[in-house]
Image 1 (cartoon, rainbow, N blue to C red):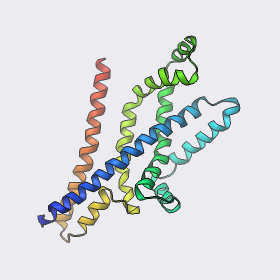
Image 2: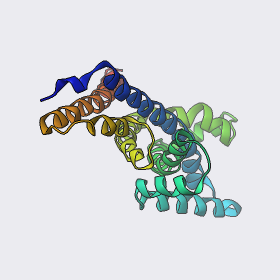
Image 3: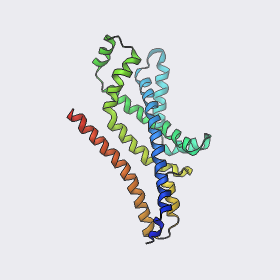
Image 4: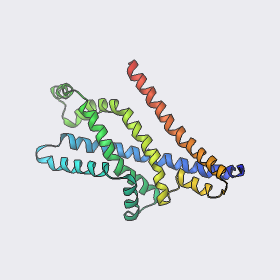
Length: 217
């Protein structure tokens, strides 16, 4: 086993990829929550003359939920101009927004109708009701599911190695290519495993702490 491959330059090289993984994942999740919330509201509440918007939102959600993420990463890579970070965030946002939309819609369905009626009785319009009353309660209930989706985005970011984005898996493969020793290669993969695990397990711990706080309240 050649441990010299774990020199400062190689470790820093891998950690730079890890930081880019976090950056891309965080931006994708942020924009996905915004877009997914809009999609959920359109699908849930657009009726009558606005039914076409509801149909379009439903079609979007089903299209992306029923097709693989990697397909859209490759499609956007070959059709959209921009640097690799922009393409990565865009690809994950258009895909993950569909998943988040269904999570948000489930949260909206869990809010009692009396909350809507109470808001209307106090003179709140649709948008003010959503912003001040309904959505805050909705997000309180769906935080665990959203965090679960965060871990999925982080894990799926490894797909970006296929379009040469310098994230964790791509950087790790470059370092691993320097080794011809199986034991060293496995050790390097173990290091990558620990980085992914530490990040996602940290998120899981945060979710559990939040759930305990909600139960205690």
